[in-house]
Each structure stands twice: as structure tokens, then as C-alpha cells.
Image (cartoon, rainbow, N blue to C red; front, top):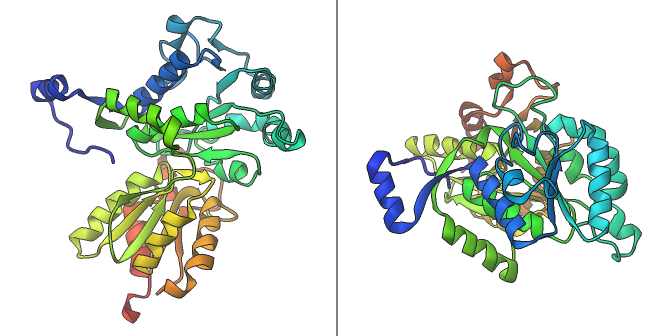
Length: 356
């Protein structure tokens, strides 16, 4: 997972030269994944608001127009519905569009296109017309942004049959999962946690590329959760921006003598019941962590699935730590809204340990 022991100066450079390892940010991993996908497949086209020469608000598409030309990475008008409508037409005619919605809530004007056409085209044509497109959405909070810039909108997409919904939480997965999403034959909503764009891991990019190429043959990250940290006492289930918080909570719990396992869901749709339920059956307790408001949420769905499949293994009800059921708060108040280590540990303490 995220490399917290970042080496510095000449020692880091020497290691990089000897082993191929290099520090890579989440944002750069996405940028590299886009470039590698465009290099490998001339049908891959990138467009959206300010994604051309500027490189996007978060610079995820930096340098792609200069490298591949304005025909393959270009700016659009400020019209999200038009962006998605054009993507549908392109995908129906042999191209692989990768579109960027500048911020999570900016995607709402495109929602009718997503629900009515993107999600339903394959079913409407009995599988004869596929839409291999990716809608990239910088999402969630933690950056001190105002409303319309920090929504956790995953439930809307996860609730819509016909969409695959992915949410990476590590630099490594940012690269691998975006490569998988672009190769996927059906439409993918790719949720990028904004507050993780500047996180770093030390990785071997050549090995990462090889792993991505091998995945094209052996399988992909789609539909696969991972155990981010092993534990025995309870399971923390998280995705996207909540994974680092869950890992920090597990680290704090370990100092108090409690062993918490952390599951990084990664793929919201399709959902990996096998990995999640195996962990909960082992530990007997579970807490689901997500930034989105809890009512009618992905977190609520995960709780239901775990409760249905692990009922006889549970020592306590499955609990949630989520955002509150309110509009996203002002920047100075967001730390009250977002799941925190203290909120997670308080919830873990309530898992009926006296009955153990």
C-alpha cells in the first residue's frame, strides 16, 4: 500500500537507478496510465474541460496533447451532457473515449446521458452495441473545496445497472485500474479521490507496466477487492479516499493491542463478496467506512451484503462510519463531516467486545 517511508535525496536516486524504483504520485500514475493506453491503442481518445494544453485542473492529462496531438486529447465546451453524448457516439463507432468530468458534482448535467444511454445501450441492443468508454471523475472531499467540488456521488452510479464503478486508493492501483478500465468492453465510471492525487509510492514503473499487460491476458482488477492489512479482531471495509483513514485507524488500534484487518474494496460494481465475506467470517466483526452520507449509500449496501452472508459468524452488528446526511459542509467544517481515525476507533469499541 502507500509507502510512508519515503526515502530522500541521493539515497532514493541511487536506489531508483539500481532497481528501477522511483517515487510516483497518484496523479502521475494516472497520467502515465493514460499515456500508455494511448500509445498501445490508437482508438483511445481523451477529452473534457481544460484537459488539453492545460492538462486538466489537477494536471492528470498534462503533456498528452503535446505528445499525441489535438485530435486525441482536446478541450470541449463547458457542457457535460454534450461531452457524454459525444462519447456515446464515438464508442458506438469503434473509438474508446476517456472523458474527464472536472469535479464530481459537475457530472450531474451528464447524468441523463449516463443513465439513459451509457448504462443501457448494451442491453437495449442485446449486446450487439458495446460502449467501451471511461468517465473519469475526481471525487470526494479532503481538499478544502466548496460544495459542487467535493461530492461523493458513487451511489448514483453503483445503483445504475450497466455501469462498472471503480475507486482506486493507492498509487499502484491508480495505474493498474485505469489501464484495466480503458481495456474493459463496457462503460466504466472511474472515481479518483482528489485528496490522494499528491500521495506517493516508490514503484518500479516497468514492472507495473508488465503487470498491466499481463492482466490483459490473465484477468483484471475489476471485481476484485484486496486485503490491505491483515488482522484478527475486526474488519474495516473501505474504498477510495477512506482506505488510508482505515489503515491509520488500524495502526492506532494496534498500538492499543487490537488487530484490525483492512479490506480495500476497489471495485464497487461488480462487488467482490468473496474477499469481503472471508475476512468478516474470520474476524466476526465489521465496520464499513465511506465519505458519502450513509442513507441509501454504497456503505449501506455493503452492510446488507455482509449481514446476509455472514450472519452466523458475526459477534456484533455491522456498523458504519460515513459522512452525515447533509450537503457537503464549508471547508472549515469538513473535518467534522469526514470519517476520522477517532470516529472509526470509537465505532470499533462499540462492537460488543464484552461478549467475546
